[in-house]
Image (cartoon, rainbow, N blue to C red; front, side, top):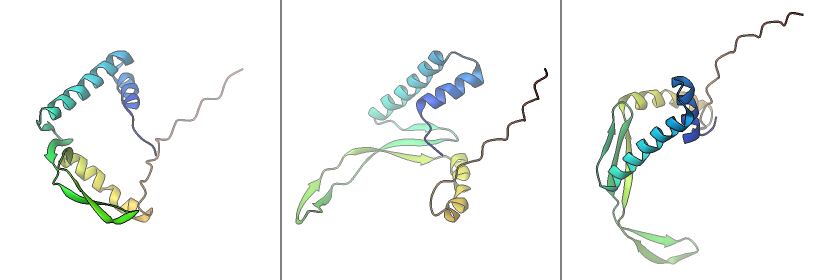
Length: 123
């Protein structure tokens, strides 16, 4: 169980497509840059079967310092990105619910596929 990084994606895609890692990294980075640019222009990003990223404005709210509860201040409204998962992602992640409940709320690591035994070396 770990975190999937951009580097992990590049290595996986490179090995599956037999493209150079530099080329794959460039494509992944340009994709992420395009998504970021669209969100910065307040456009929604819809990736079918994955999800939708949209810019939303949070409401201003009152904040308090836990060390000085008597003092309060206003947290201003700000733009944030909200992610709404697509149908396929939602269904696949929902399957984890029962396993996570049994595991005390922790994610369950998926078992790696079994490797074929190595052939005995001939002398």
